[in-house]
Length: 340
Image (cartoon, rainbow, N blue to C red; front, side, top):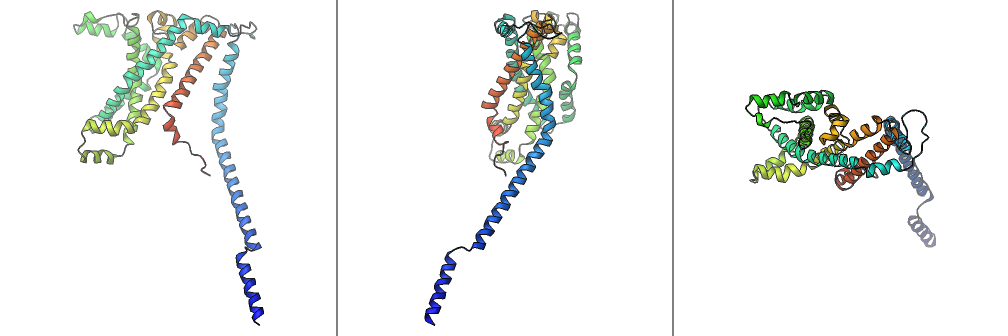
């Protein structure tokens, strides 16, 4: 009897120390089911992404990538815009662009407009946004008046300002009636003044967009932070410098990015107010104006296509550099990895 009990006890201990075949099979089955569920979830997510982003990708390929590739192809030819391009010139168009003093001048104009847009519009938009974020009478009306120029068509803005800034236009006439006739000048044709006239028009039109962005950023900052700072004895300017501006940083950086790209591609206002030829003598010509004047208007569509490619590459390089060194920490939190 004792031998039998001892054998049973040993067998029981051995059974407890070794996992059963049924338990291992059940664990493997659960693992396979979970893996299959993860695969189905990932497949469903990829399908949703494809369905939602597919139309946008098709539009992007059709209206951005394909035209750029076609322009790059035409840029290797001396082509007049009709028939198949046959006069191969290789990289001569691109060499001519980079060595042309006129292109270097318009590139300088674009760079100057870019810097002045950031320097003028940025601080002014922040100041106006801080003012309009306060509870003041007529705040809604002021916001509408500031934002209204942004939604007005560039054609209307350019035509209106070109008429008012003529030598016998409304601006000089107003100065005469105010007793400031000595300030009358050629606002559009004076090379030393025309670029500043352009910056005034650009700032007037686009400041509303910057203000709206800044207001949106301000309203996303929790009020509790301001209240805590006030309790701690911080002054108004200390609150703005220590709390508002750092938390408004992502909004400022996004606005600056949009302003930079818009400055590099500026065309419509300059074309409407000055035209492709007067802009060159007035000192307001841009890369886009140079492209139209030297490409379409000159009947050399191959050269114009090469200019378009150069503009695209400059904008792309600037955008990638800005994203790499400025927007990096803002984009880091927007990308989720290993969510599933």
